[in-house]
Image 1 (tube, rainbow, N blue to C red):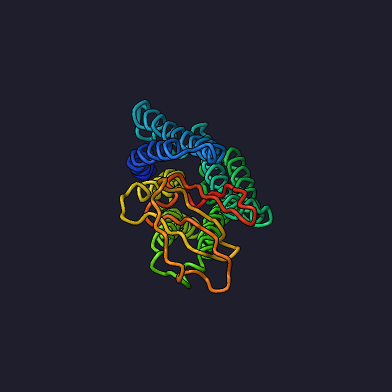
Image 2 (cartoon, rainbow, N blue to C red):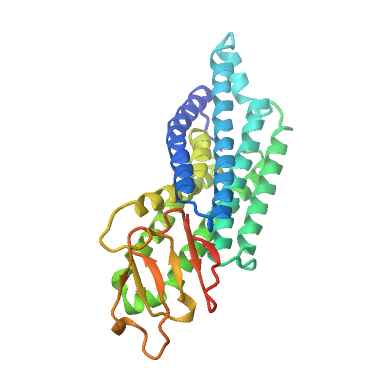
Length: 343
């Protein structure tokens, strides 16, 4: 049995919470663009352009969502002549503004998923096979969202978002979106873990910057994952709390990917006595470098090198890792391959 709650209270609370989170979203977006543009180089121009474009589309979709909610706030609470008219307006799922919100949620998920997929693609050195799972989940989330929004346009007066034909598709949408967030986080963090295996074995004291990146990636993804789990649980159980958080989740999902860029950029701006290391490594890590300040390196003694291997210089940032999220992995001929780190 679905618990009842006054739409006057739930809608107003939801919009006010979204406005609060949107304020943080604005700050995060501009810091994100500033970080990307400031740290961009000729080698990272393409990745920077893609990231700025996707981040901007993501932010614009979230802005359009809050704009529609503000409009609904006026139309639902100020213009109606009576309380009954207000309730009728707020309960109407087919109201154009309400339908538009659903499709904007789909766009926010789409651009967020594309941003995550792009990171996975680059950090795995443009391996298309690795991106199969993220692409599949991204398309699945998009299709389920479109179908959910379409079905909402056909509901009858008195019906809710828990209607059977809507519920099955909406549940799939929320589940796939959560799976997308978790899977891309695992792919990004595991890749960083894998390519730094030699550092952990020979010089664990220099793992700190990479632990920082992994922690930032996981924590930022967890922010979105937690609210997605709450959203899915509330919806499956038909708990009315879903009405209070549904709008806020849009802003959090839009903000989470950009937080990674900002946090890594802020981390990279901190001064440190040691910014990099140069050491002999295996072919897998040959000349892999996280972008950092020029000339800030420390040559390690030859005794630190792997025995029996030809020394190959690799530069790893110790404090200023991935200022704009870009690193290069040179193998064999030292031909640079731009790879997007988890930002």
